[in-house]
Figure 1 (cartoon, rainbow, N blue to C red):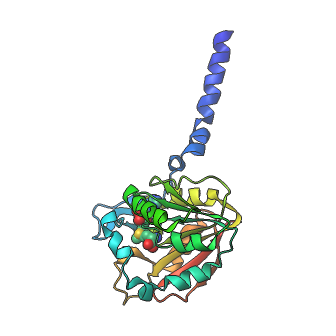
Figure 2 (figure 1 turned 180 degrees about the horizontal axis):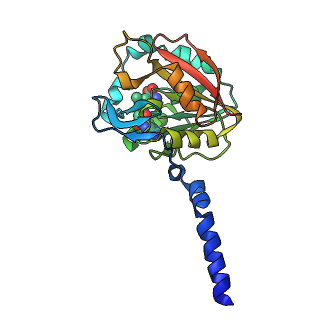
Figure 3 (figure 1 turned 90 degrees about the horizontal axis):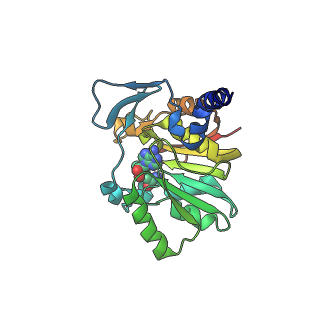
Length: 243
Ligand SMILES: C[S@@+](CC[C@H](N)C(=O)[O-])C[C@H]1O[C@@H](n2cnc3c(N)ncnc32)[C@H](O)[C@@H]1O
């Protein structure tokens, strides 16, 4: 009799295991739309998702480029932050935060809330940690993510910002599932991407994205397009809402 109970418990655990594992790691669910390419572009990783080749990651040695002084004029980060309409009590995330170029101004606005600054590169987070200590930004929490999981708690975010980062996610479907899970119902994911429609832009092709592509990819994870702000010189600022 005992062995029958043991066998039934094992069978039930075996049947439940994908669901249990998925609760711990978003990478367990994979999207069938990934394709491996036989060759990779100069700025790509040789893997295609929903028709586009995923871009390579800007390494931490490129941190100086993210902090270049000309960026303020070229990209108008002030307009980007203004368009987010952040309120003091909001809980937000900067995903693919890099050196924290956007985490810091966000933290200065969500004074009663919190910013989760998420990145896969510990070296980037170390730069952010140093800046955070120097400027006393106590409401910034640094999060080391994996390639497929932003490692954020569920249902906590009012807003998740991704600036020049989404096109680099090696597992965009799984990452975005993690972002959607971290958003509160009604919460908003915001993508800033260099305009893929702009043939004259000097940005490398896989580091840009068309609106059409972004809308298709966000719809795949259940996000609804809300609006696109076109006030930035070179980037679409696209807002998607969790129902
Ligand atoms: C081009 S940088 C942009 C950094 C920052 N958002 C900015 O605008 O200054 C892209 C960042 O995304 C990070 N990244 C790439 N894939 C990621 C992933 N799966 N999860 C978290 N961060 C990721 C990279 O490590 C890099 O720091």
